[in-house]
Amino acid sequence: SSWPLNATLHMHLSNTPLMSAASKLAGKLRLPCIGAPLFIVSTPDLVIAQCKAGIVGSFPALNARPKDKLDEWLVRIKSELAEHDAAHPDSPAAPFAVNQIVHRSNDRLMHDLEACVKHEVPLVITSLGAREDVNQAIHSYGGLVFHDVINNHFAKKAVQKGADGIIAVAAGAGGHAGTLSPFALVSEIREWFDGPLCLSGSIATGSGVLAAQALGADFAYMGSAFIASAEANAQDAYKQSIVESVAADIVYSSLFTGVHGNYLRPSIMAAGLDPDNLPEGDVTQMDFGSGGNTDAKAWKDIWGCGQGIGAIKEVSTAGEIVERLKGEYAAAVAESRAATGRFVP
Image 1: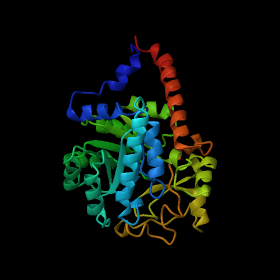
Image 2: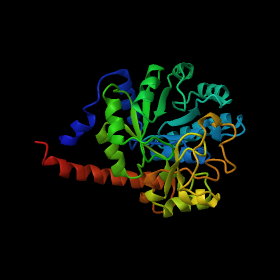
Image 3: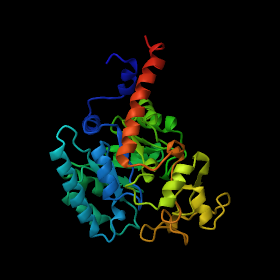
Image 4: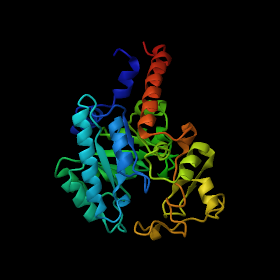
């Protein structure tokens, strides 16, 4: 393509092994997008639907309860995706990912990591702590590790400890989120890192996916849009609240897990709390065995969600969501050509 924006989108690419890792992953996708792992909400049904639609589907290992269920889930995901590939050789499924909470309170980490190694999970997403031994375990069979961060300092620490890719969690992201502008965060990380970079934070449209690439990210990282999917393991009221809510309905608080995150205002009110006067949480009480610091366990009764939900108008299947995104992405590419052409000779 002679499209000038193409050069802009890819000017940060180089021939490093990590960059080729990003290119290799992108080659297996029909949209440069990773479905974020959603606590409680992401199960094999959603992951399989996302992968079949051509984006990375993921789930937190802790969603498989009791812990022995993780092995069953991995067997099912691998077998159903293999069946899909055999039946659809021209449109194979995207790879899947498992999220590991690398926090000292997660007493399942070693068990869950062993399952990922046994099943050779292609991509592991690590959160709340970067550890060299975890990364080495995934690298032992050729897997990739992407680590999520809220600032440049943590990004550097993650790469120093062996992470292959970075997930930049900017302002407005669902769940545990930072406060930095995506423009600032991606720019700072790209000053020194040319490996796989994902951008998270309020992306719920195809034009948002293209914008993430224009900033210098390789992939958009998108969660909240898929909570309002038929396959999501979420209450109907949760899904409907996402459809009906907008960015102003999102509350940023540390009360529920000890780490700041974004939540739906109606769910906080339903729990009998005042969204405008929430006390600070205690990071030392963060416990991924119990689920939170209050009687209303975070993520179960208090609904995590990002600011991008104004774009979500209905509950639909994951496949339909990806098709909508692909159509919007194509339209945004065409519009970008028209808008940038006059500025780039």
